[in-house]
Length: 363
Ligand SMILES: Nc1ncnc2c1ncn2[C@@H]1O[C@H](COP(=O)(O)OP(=O)(O)OP(=O)(O)O)[C@@H](O)[C@H]1O
Ligand code: SF4
Ligand SMILES: [Mg+2]
View (cartoon, rainbow, N blue to C red):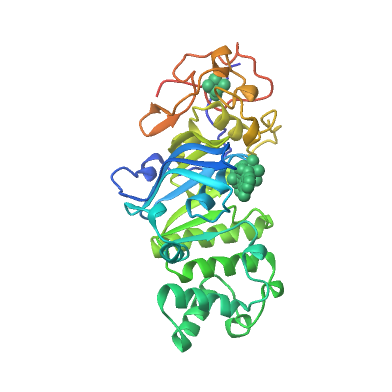
């Protein structure tokens, strides 16, 4: 049996390749050789390059503990003093690292908005929703009084929260989880950001509400033209909304490509493993094949390729050499030492993975 077949025809339809054109779009937000280190010694993010263009949607995927959240929290200097960063973060060509706290406060929530997995902990529990929205409108758009109230009502209506005048007077505990997530989105929109960083925005929600919130984000992007960085452990969610995807593993980017290319012809064994664990929407039920093992803790990242202990095609040198991101095809890069080798996956030791595509298959 060949393991070189592509994705199951039952899988969701991903955006067409042409959809992914990002070339030529100037970077709005760019991380260059970005590192995050804990307590001066423990590397959590290990030199990543990422950029998102104006209006573009970039997905960041990877299992729990890969460094997806800490990358953006650290980039916006939202972490404590025990966390240090290296490399550069640029917004429209300007070094964010060089901004004063006051300037950075205007960037956060103004030019870059964040929404988190757990809105209940991100919203202030002792402040009315109206007060929280008004604060953003005042700080980032200079709106106060009646114009601010009108805009707050418009925002609530836009995110699908009815009975605005009453809702503005309520506290977060008076809203359901899905409604609080909508409030978070309204707060994010209040600053009219250029880019929205959405960190697992729907993980805590049930499937129906999750789909509604994702649809809302999609519509709002279309209306406002804001760029999106969508962080998720669910490659299916990211594939639905984003034009480009970066896959993270143990604090590094291991593969990046246009969504269609990455999902239909993944080149890195880790990406292939994530896809093999993705359920199909229709067709016969089939056994999912999770990647064996777990992501290493930052203090215990093995030398060489960090994925080697879990990789079905690892060879001896994978334990010694650090793979760099290399072009696997046009606009698709992967960090695998065996990229381009005509590997017979049949003969490789494949403990559990059903590969959706062959590593290093010709473009
Ligand atoms: N503030 C912090 N201080 C110390 N270590 C941290 C901190 N935040 C995260 N870490 C560690 O950094 C690593 C990456 O964490 P991060 O939260 O970025 O993962 P993630 O990819 O977002 O995972 P998840 O999908 O669970 O949200 C983990 O090992 C985590 O324990
Ligand atoms: S470098 Fe080696 S261990 Fe790492 S993904 Fe490639 S084959 Fe697997
Ligand atoms: Mg996270």
